[in-house]
Amino acid sequence: MSDRVNRQWLLARRPQGMVSPADFEFVERPIPELAEGEYLVRNLYISFDPTMRGWMEDRESYMPPVALGDVMRCSTVGQVTESKNPAYARGTILTGLFGMQELAVGGQGFMHGTPVAEGTPLTWPLGVTGLTGMTAYFGMLELGEPKPGETVLVSGAAGATGSVAAQIAKLEGCRVVGIAGGPEKCAWLEKEAGLDAAIDYKSENVEERIRALCPDGVDIYFDNVAGPILDAALANLALRARVVMCGGISGYNEEKPPPGPQNLMNVIIQRARMEGFIIIDYVSRFPEAAAALTQWVREGKIVHQEDVQVGIENAPETFVRLFTGQNLGKQLLKVGDPVDL
Ligand code: NDP
Image 1 (tube, rainbow, N blue to C red):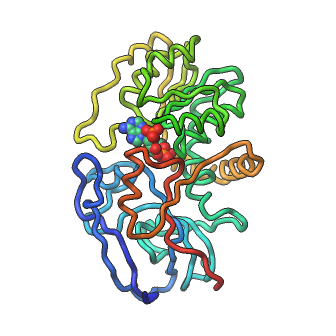
Image 2 (image 1 turned 135 degrees about the vertical axis):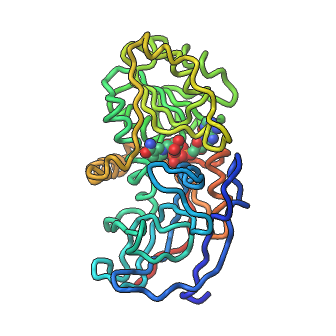
């Protein structure tokens, strides 16, 4: 393939219900000549994040929607292969919103790269030391405010964000219970990630299991899923509990917003606090979080899983894995290797 031809996935239509590979269109297009200040990025790893499902809707959020016919927006790690920008030398490894495609022109719109520190494994800036790890870091530490001896419950616990949030709570001296789908993920949580217990929401009565495993109530509930699991957690709050509203993946593919929680009154009765956040609020503190996470991972205090699929042609199917729970840890797609330039 000529270096000047790009293989891209465009947003072909707005999804209805569950996102489908047919919502995307595969095209091959020539790369435009670079203008002054621009640089060409060859993507190496593409990151799939549940929030991309929201960007496919025609509604304003914390970021504008992806326009129909545009390249699907997503984070990647890539390498600069050509440059008309002195700040981005050829060979530089960087991360940014370079989209579901092989090549991207950086230096315009959302396409601005952040160089990756030398020696960092290429996948980490998209996961454990990147946005999902940092979401866990700020969500747990700033909103959750864990104290030694407290009981922490995390949903989506075997995923990229949840697994790190749960382990940070362990590092803070808490007793941690995770909720995940299936025996394999629950075994990983207990045996590899060091959680005190795991609940398989696909085969167990979640509310009963929380009550049994957290007899004094839940001090921090870190919510990645919303829906019935949030309701079960609300029914088991301890006095002055904190509910960290990180995500609500159980509703992302629903046509209509799911019904509100039934156990909301318990927030009043237990004088609890529910608080949402978006990770971009913490941009100025990203270096602090990335440094802490990198150290914990290198010291073996935080373990993480990466689910690496291969080939740009498999991008839509890889995205769907997030919503069927097929991903074991951070969902990535490898589309290239770095080269000596
Ligand atoms: P994960 O690695 O956790 O992957 C998604 C997981 O969600 C799946 O593996 C699956 O796990 C679970 N899941 C999928 N569908 C359902 C469902 N219907 N009910 C319950 N669980 C479901 O993804 P991320 O770590 O990237 O994201 C986790 C959450 O964090 C998302 O809600 C995301 O939107 C949120 N987030 C929020 C940010 C913020 O700034 N607030 C930033 C980044 C992420 P299982 O097999 O266990 O069901």
